Image (cartoon, rainbow, N blue to C red; front, side, top):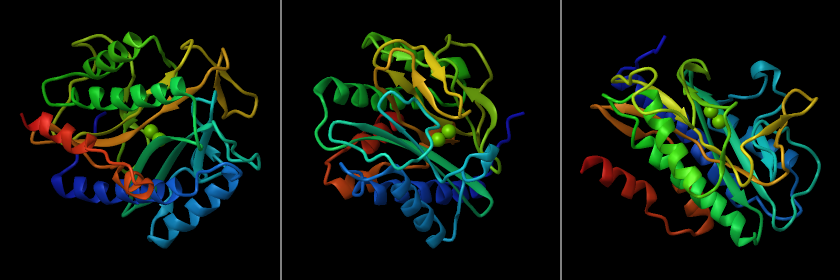
Amino acid sequence: MIIQKTKEEIELMRESALVVSKTLGMLAKEVKPGVTTLHLDKLAEEFIREQGAIPGFLGLYDFPNTLCMSPNSQVVHGIPNNTPLVEGDIISIDCGAILNGYYGDHAYTFPVGEIAAETQQLLDVTKESLYVGIREFKVGNRVGDVGYAIQQFTEKHGYGVVRELVGHGIGKTMHEDPEMPNYGRRGRGKKFVEGMVVAIEPMTNMGTQKIRHHKDGWTITTLDGKPSAHFEHDVAIVDGKPELLSTFQYIYDALGIESDEENEFRTKIIN
Ligand code: MG
Ligand code: MG
């Protein structure tokens, strides 16, 4: 069942999303060679609690930490550990927080120092596919329209779209209806309605789309060992159109990156 939110509830959800956005912005400066994902996890937990929020992943389905930290060939759900990041790695950081009873959940894949050009391209294409998908999240469209758009864009670049893991509705619980796959067929699946809030989150593999589940019950890696990237935004339908609740701007401000992608996205939606 899709749970529609009022405009007031969507504003509360924006605050939850922004706790996560600010946490990712704080972490952006800390991601560097030599740092461990467990250290970053502790920083994130403290930061979230300082903002009066609660880590959204900690204890959820018995997950042991605040962040899902998935380096290199790990797709998602990686558990923070004491292995230092090294120059040339990529690290997907997925973060959740609860504020005022609502969840925020979004993710960014960071380069660690200098990375290979082909890896940077994987990050760029995956992030762009996120916006390509979000543009289709509007009244009148269906779940398959978002998945189709992401899949077409991603496969055009020769990358693999992970099938087993999907985006989701979000609200007072982390995972609500509907599931939001990153592949699909136009005009298929549940219809989008006013007040829906979803997390759209392409998981894109440089090589094969196939993945492997590890014995710890969490870690998922690409079958061929090639890198995988993951970007996620929380998005609401307001007045029929998609509205970003989360933002990567705190990350860009922290890193001194000039990016107009979110404004550009909004401009395209209005026109
Ligand atoms: Mg997430
Ligand atoms: Mg999610």
